Length: 355
Image 1 (cartoon, rainbow, N blue to C red):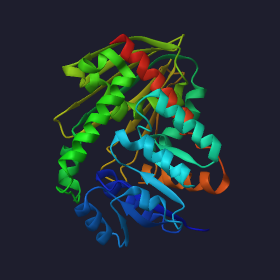
Image 2 (spheres, helix red, strand yellow):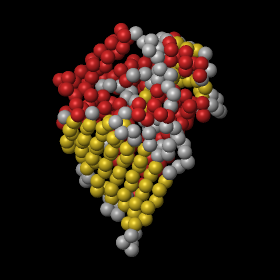
Image 3 (cartoon, rainbow, N blue to C red):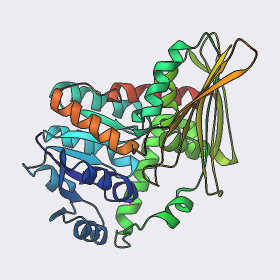
Image 4 (cartoon, rainbow, N blue to C red):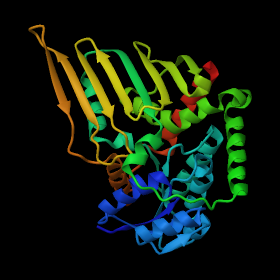
């Protein structure tokens, strides 16, 4: 099998902890040949650790490298759209971390560019590639009737989980001017997305873009696109959000927040009349922790039967990259493609209208 040569744009936590180990594990399929970051300290440290000699402070130089077949984009949210567009313009396939775009106009630009070039754009929803989750998508169709669903994601701050488990190379050499420009651009994009609500609810919108897009994306694959949002509320300045999605015959309750407890409390639940299904996720920042599927079924003798599917200790990022390779080499459209991502933004807009 031919190796795909990969360039990485953005060498922070998720690249170091998750993507680089996954690509190394799949070294029969991929070879990382180039990296780019605005921190020279990070660039040199990561390059030395992973023996990557092509190191670029300007990502355009990486995109101009004719050896690079595909790029991973893991920079701050605000740059994902412009870098994805530039990568497609340069003829590169793209795996872009969520959120692919911060507002609908940018999403539409990527959708149009992807269609024009025919290149692969896969959004980094690694939870949706977990074996247990994909089995849940099959099993939910076997439920007698869905009565209620629940999406829950309350987690400790990433630093609480990363600090004791990973050594991350960090840089303090990024100019304050560049940081200020990034912050200003982020404010501009949020203002475009949510207009007059930006001043009070920018944190809530950032939570939706960063954490909740995983949950709502998985909800959509498991249950389909809801008819709409019945209600939504934000508290703690937007750090905690709850909502109710209308599926016609049933409601899906959604709740999320970030606290200072070092744990990862993340699940999807679907309740039928005689069966229930539950998907439990572990933190992605400790590799190879299994995603688990639990099914509970009523038995004729008034008892119950529990079935637990917990695959071997595979990593969801690794599965995501395996699917990316398949998509690129066969021309298959990713299930987590730009048009799929756009549906998340549509639901975010509906949530923001209710807040």
